[in-house]
Image (cartoon, rainbow, N blue to C red; front, side, top):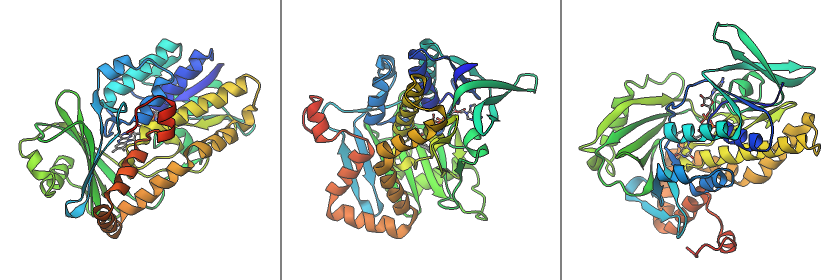
Length: 391
Ligand SMILES: Cc1cc2nc3c(=O)[nH]c(=O)nc-3n(C[C@H](O)[C@H](O)[C@H](O)COP(=O)(O)OP(=O)(O)OC[C@H]3O[C@@H](n4cnc5c(N)ncnc54)[C@H](O)[C@@H]3O)c2cc1C
């Protein structure tokens, strides 16, 4: 039997594996895909995400293989545009998820975790009301049972474990879809991530290494709406119709096929159950608009690993570990969850976007504050304590 079985080798699963394996736990991680694999994402790590990583791994190779992101450009209808830099000494990174996720998963292997790729978790093993392991699809088509003292579900937004155990659900609203792809030859890209909020949709644009530009279009799509049509044409038509973007994409060429994902919203109702802890998107999906998903996924993995290590040290009960995790997640994330929910509601309604645009024109500093909060920047007090120059 392993000490910890982890489903999913994305950023949350990989970081939990690193922390636990380094602390001496026997960790086995099952990942459905074989890395490197593509993952639809805006490809930016905010300064908060980097800070979590730097607590546990040497990020030198990550920094070398990625580009610096100095802040955010936020635009709204009617020509509103606010550019906010993170400030002196602080930056995020732009890196494709195929590169970032593989790098982090290899760190888990180096830390001593047993990582099995191409191994999909199919469900939970349950005994006497407690999760005691997982079943994994075997190569010959049979299900294989793997037991662990504790199990972490880090298998992403549509977590097999969280859904099959009734811990997560897809809300009726909002029903938004993301269509993401890469372009070359985009004009006017700097070293900031861009979020272009329009009535009814938004478009994220980010420069990534190799002269590529990541474009994610997020649009509502209700049950019964007309089919999307071809994703590549949909992205192109939204860019062509956008007065702030169309000129910049005149010479742009798509690289590869775009990926479609949705409906995006998933809400988790708990942080787990006896024997099972949720981490990353499996514990609830954050609207990509804030660009804070990876930071929350990594910080959530850190919390799950800390709770498990306390249980192994005899300072907590395995049956109640999920309750302790829920308490810590609330303490760490509640204000950010509220912020994300407010932002999500605001951009869902055209009236909300118009009102925000009016407000931004009158008081642009409000948007600067929002951008800095979304980037999970340390407060001035924390910056001063860490010896950072004032921004
Ligand atoms: C359009 C879009 C843009 C985004 N842009 C950004 C951004 O720019 N910055 C940011 O910080 N966040 C962004 N996010 C959010 C970010 O992508 C997620 O928060 C992050 O990927 C969560 O990491 P995770 O490890 O929890 O899950 P994932 O990254 O989804 O990893 C889960 C892993 O589990 C594996 N898996 C799934 N099912 C199984 C199974 N049954 N058995 C075994 N393995 C399984 C998957 O193959 C995957 O490797 C964006 C999200 C979207 C949708």
